[in-house]
Image (cartoon, rainbow, N blue to C red; front, side):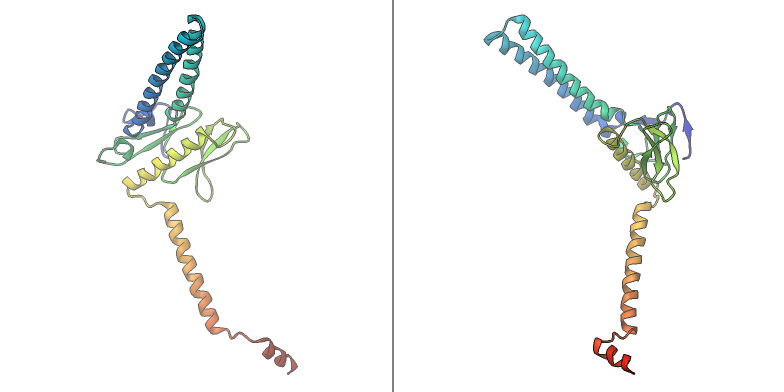
Length: 218
């Protein structure tokens, strides 16, 4: 963790304000318009073939409210992503001119820099919900992140977006990916282990059961 701030710096943009999030806004607007059109069509159909104007209006209004609520909740799950980036981040869809930065919004209102490592959550027994930690061997804590009861749905999407933002930030800043380094070390260790087994097989003579039997008789 590098920086703490209760106010988002002016050079940072929230995720929902970035160019990569604009399709979400367009999708929300399209879905809202579709909900209104569907409600109007439903009203005219009910009014013409079955019900009075009052009942048709009631059913159409209920349908519109339900559809609009679903659309808004789905949009909010993305719009509430506690993430901000600067103009040099790939989320801005422009050529970076300097160092990329990522900030995460914590439950207490602070904006923090998570560092170069990916993050994950662990249960917070004291405050409830989850604490955000760096995904390293000792899991250094960054702070209380969410009051959610489980890592699913919205929280899981937020973590995925945050880790993607960190990985892209590292790519711009030419920071080695710790996970990729670990995979490379694992491959090297596996290769050394395999060569070690081959060398041992060349040195050690494997005795047959018959040879072992006569050796025991000596």
